[in-house]
Length: 128
Picture 1: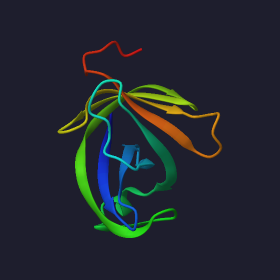
Picture 2: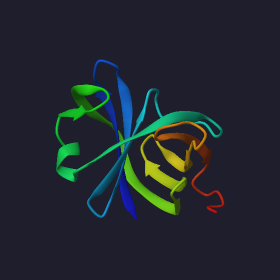
Picture 3: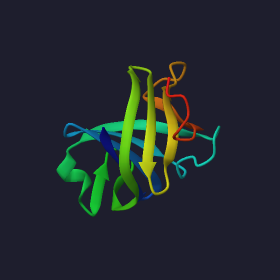
């Protein structure tokens, strides 16, 4: 089981950062809007540089794309990652706001590191 943290990052362009923390490795995706809360809702998620666990616990964070700004925890908890491929992650979140099954799917047709984050079901949904 891994942990997750969602920051509300106040920079020149405010956004949310989804962070997956597993074995001291932090993968991050920036979302321009609040993470989806209803089944079927999607958000553009842009994968960012990997950060150290120590760095994500600071009150101010610096990112290449958005600059420096205050980072406040919006949600946190545990996440079970059930499917991992280079183009797809299926996860079950157990946080205060993010609960249930979500999928991150890489957008191969678009250049860069663009993904779609979709709320795909409640936590008791079929995981495969």
